[in-house]
Amino acid sequence: MSTTRIRKPRTEREYEEIIDELITQGYKIQNRGTASTKLIKASYGSVIAHIIIFVFLGWWTFLVANLIYLAYNYVSNSDEVLVKLTETTDRCPKCQAEILLQDVHCSNCGAKLK
Ligand SMILES: [Zn+2]
Image 1 (cartoon, helix red, strand yellow):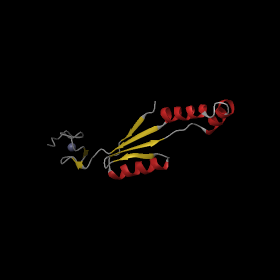
Image 2 (spheres, rainbow, N blue to C red; image 1 turned 45 degrees about the vertical axis):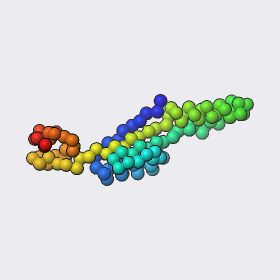
Image 3 (tube, protein in one colour; image 1 turned 135 degrees about the horizontal axis):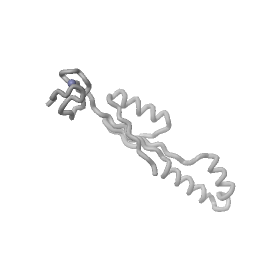
Image 4 (tube, rainbow, N blue to C red; image 1 turned 45 degrees about the horizontal axis):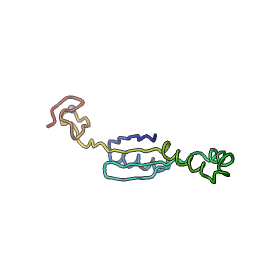
């Protein structure tokens, strides 16, 4: 099965950087939002494996064997990454530690935030 990895940047800059980095690695954007973007890297199997399959099976199966191998790789080895921005735009008024917007208490000093 293909797996979905999740990356959690803490700032908008880091969010853009991770997306850029993944595109450089061959990922394509599947859907893009302001706080979360899904990228996918399709796998079609190795060229060498395709040649071997073609030599032994492809020429008499009219490439069906190659198509099956390609489909199998696409389904099981494609890689998905979800980049999800976790907002940390707020800071604790007492200790200045970064806090999540939904936090009720500071995770660093325990001060009440709301
Ligand atoms: Zn604090």
